[in-house]
Length: 355
Image (cartoon, rainbow, N blue to C red; front, side, top):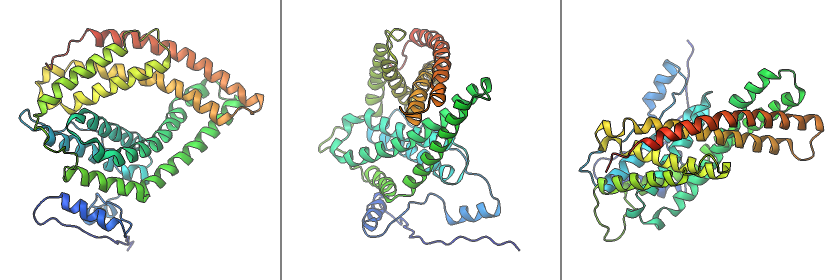
């Protein structure tokens, strides 16, 4: 009989009654003297995993279940917890799986969480989350480095190598990129296992459940009082950013990409507050626009990565890969700009219907 076992050393905190915030506050207190890792799987789940082994699944974003009569404070909690669930749900894929999408989905979860804090900024005591924002930026940067290398290694270089399979400079560059990618992935795993990351998770839970964001004598807004003005504001910002989209340098297009993401996240957060017809046509057009802007950003990042890995003192034979990459990117930039022009026109014609 082939037996499998796992040593378990855990503290189980169970809420009998009262606020779940007390659990997070107590866990943070314990964490001051005991290194803790927040576990999102039960012992029974881990047992079933041994009985029927399977690779960790990718967890994607889901729209939070909001209703129009809900308070803004409750809506913030629901949105933030949904982001938190996506973040934790992809940890096992990153730590033990082989699908690089887990890194991407953790990064998306963090971006969505930070975006939600920005959306509800008018009801948040900003001093209450300064330390949380700092740690969110830290882990987002670590994940971002791994994600950028993965896109370059899995999407950009393979296409070029198909055209130049025997090019020595590209083969050397490919080796450098994969080595850097492995190091970046190890850095991500180390970060997720670190006490800084675990303390961040507990801090977010404590901040949310104990509603530490509340301002003194804060006004009790309804979620619609936040949602509709914010959607209009972000739509206006994107239209302004994209006014001269085809003529501006990539750096400015990157700002447009960020504006598009912010509007997209806001629409996804508030999608249940409006009849489906009001957002049904808006989100697909915005998604295509965001994807095209993302592709242009990936092109720019690929050259930065290659230049950094090769260095200024590289041999001429290796420097040749930069010329090949530059030509390839110039061709793809031309194609993506054609897509951008078409996708922007479709988006620009859509009228906001959440007023």
